Image 1 (cartoon, rainbow, N blue to C red):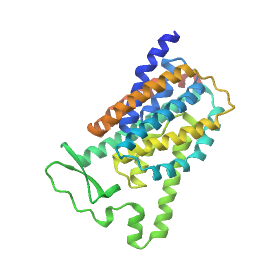
Image 2: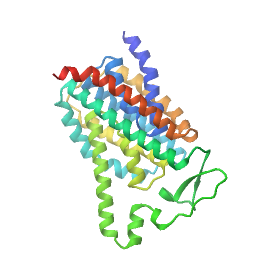
Image 3: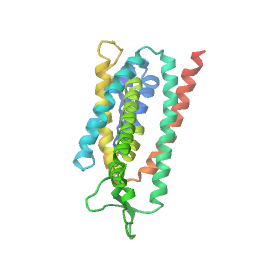
Image 4: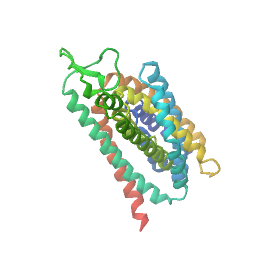
Length: 304
């Protein structure tokens, strides 16, 4: 049975890594259900092992994206640091939650993640249309100034209104108030991501990627790469906060899972540079709905 579990960890881990590398999130949220229902791990031990698996895989994936110039390390470090407190709080809260309640809440998180990924995919599809896409940057600009255009079409003129939030605020003369709101949104998003990471042992990439695009003005490829750095930071913080709680973790199984996930993230990085992310996100959101339904069916009946 142990050998079978190790063999099963390879394809599941590869799928997690593939999603992390291609989408900057989503795959890590499958780790806990896979460890619990496919590999027979205790729920609290699974969330702890997930932090190791997700953190190491995200770090490896971010290195691959960094080589391709898709990681904004400064912004990623700031966002990750702002989420550390949330990671500690989430870890402490998780240790006092019953197994079935934890998994029931996790099924709800899966549905939220699915909806967020589907919405993001629809927005991408609406912006790009059914055409072949060609990435183009305007004068080396980043964020909203970087555009993706259909081949053979002229780029639209980027106006001042399309610039990142802080730059836009300064241009309109309301920089102090708008900058305060801007950082409030960044801190709130980072704290939520940290809380989710600590509580559920997930990376929270489905929250990080949109936050990096909307709040920090990164392009989608940059947000995907940078989100992995954020996930690695939050996972490390949450793991440190669990020291002394003595969760039951099968470290040999976790090690195999990590190796498979890192391999998958390498292929995911290649997919990110070639495939249509909106189609990948939509397909993955459907997978999350299925996993959420199964998790809820297994855990919720035991709460009554």
